[in-house]
Image (tube, rainbow, N blue to C red; front, side, top):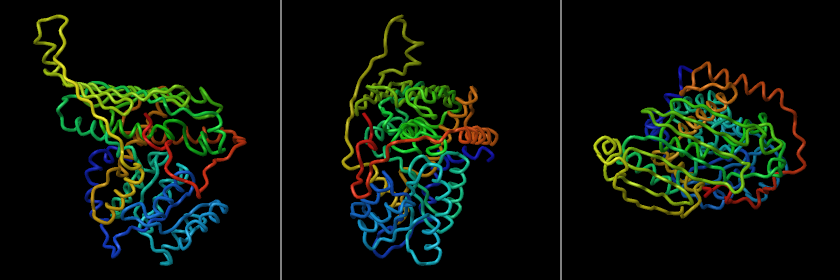
Length: 429
């Protein structure tokens, strides 16, 4: 891939405006018709939001799910909305001119995200994918490249980017007022899950089903925010512990050490096996520190840059003068709905996506590198090389082939008739 991930970082995000402009479409009613592929937990919540008319600029145009019982329920819930049994069937209808939609929302299991996205772009449609972008980086990169070349929008559902606390922290960092980045630590262990959660479906917490554990399922939002604020690290050394707290084959705890350009370092710790859990983010800079915890951003500013103070002050035990500001705010609406409206605006008006597909590529590059580091015991350099991508795919395939099928007594409880955006998908404080 010629280190293709390097092109999908901030430089690629800068090209999103051009891509959005290409995707601008005149619509008499101003509404983007979307097809939702995969109407499970989150897909059914998207269907309810778009089908009820709550999403400005967006209309529910079609639904697709492989489960015949769900299709029957969906036909009753959304009369007049076509329901398809497979993505192939839906795209065949689009290509034959029998279905008029502008975009798809992909909410299938992770390993189908990029493949379905490719089919959508080839059918002339814009793509909004649930996180993660896929399981394997090379597939997500190919989708991003193809969408960009074809002038179709590719977005990712990183809904926590709409949280005003994280947005404010990023604004401060990008302004440069805090100076050079030094160090960060994020302990995000309030993703607690019981064994019953993992037993609710035989696809959960498997290499063949989800494609990974806490790094691929629960923590992608946090990884994305970390990279959104601080940029992509140059290398990672990771320790992913598989089945440490649950009867599962994938990781339920991960500890990651990252080195960033310019000498900054970071530690990222996440787990689904700690109670009570913690969500505390610290970021240290030359001119101060940011702390985010319990929904509050604390901004600590030094009156004198620390490096200057260190070498100019003659007092052995002095500290630089300090001021503190606190910021807290809550989203007035669910972040998923805001991302849906942002996507609709980008399709219709050519506005820049808040959460472009390049963000999904970056997040997946980071997690793929962490898995590879943990599996091999090596420090992994970013962006990933072609050889590292091949090594990742090879080891993942070995894990898939050796994995025994899980016998799970439970079933996912979500019914399409009752789905709404729940607390489990919002920012966890």
